[in-house]
Image 1 (cartoon, rainbow, N blue to C red):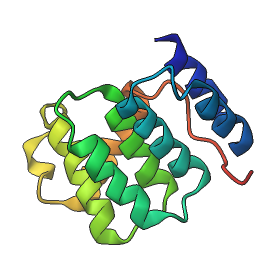
Image 2: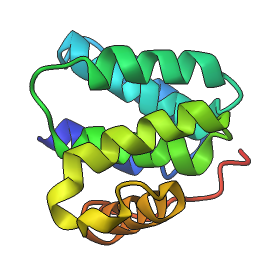
Image 3: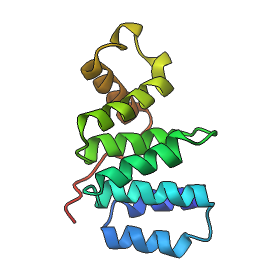
Image 4: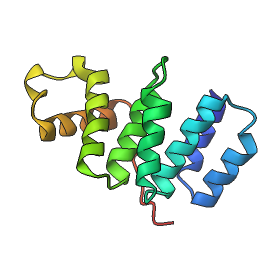
Length: 137
């Protein structure tokens, strides 16, 4: 989908550019996709909204029936860019692990640090189309 590719490129810019893109195209995408784009935007540019980010991730990503790779990327962005309380981070990492568990040895299931390392490393190497950037804009 071209609009997704264009949105991904706008998040490489400033918060104003990304937000303007979302506002401009808000009627061109489904409501679900708009929520996901806003959640990703907040994880990049508004990481201090920790509670809202976690709440929206549970509501719009974990709660949806049709899964997609972007769900994993948004989870990756939240875990790596938003300084979450440990219990919230563990919740998201567990969800990511459950989605990808066929990719990892079963022995890491009980070790949170290994699970987090394997999950984030796998997403970064196999799913991300670009690397995270400094969001000090």
